Image (cartoon, rainbow over all chains, first blue to last red):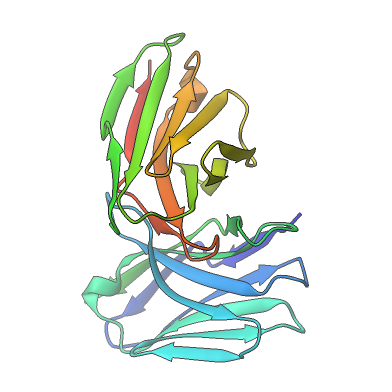
Length: 113
Length: 111
């Protein structure tokens, strides 16, 4: 089945700097890669996703890149702000079905003042 | 939270007692999911439903059962709760099975 590895587990960056979180996946047939943000005491929130027919997608200060050959995808946050502090999860389809997704173990992002 | 509610939001129970958690949606989405979230493990799928009365197991289904008798409700039952089932439980919904939207979670403590 699919295996999703996420790095780093913790990341601290100065406010205004960029943050990058990386994930690798094992199933070359996977074609959908979402990223979720979870704030303390809340459920995960879908912030951006990418499908395998594109290599990059941007939405204001966040972007996701996909390298299908290397089977990895990354979340980029530019001009970080205090409200970006949260836990971020990547995910990929689980096994043969696209109606299940497997999550990485998460990255806790700290934005330092 | 995309029209998803979970009840109860917090529950403390004793080992061996049955527990039922409820997820209710107002979005008419086809898919509904139950996850548990534990430190160091991220989010792990327990069971999911791809339609009324259609359910399937996830990666950590032992000790849990589910039922979906109507589109808007998905119930998770712990027949005999154990301390290892202390966790935060999240429900999610999806129209097509990929983009998932999560509820606010239920914190369950089994003493």
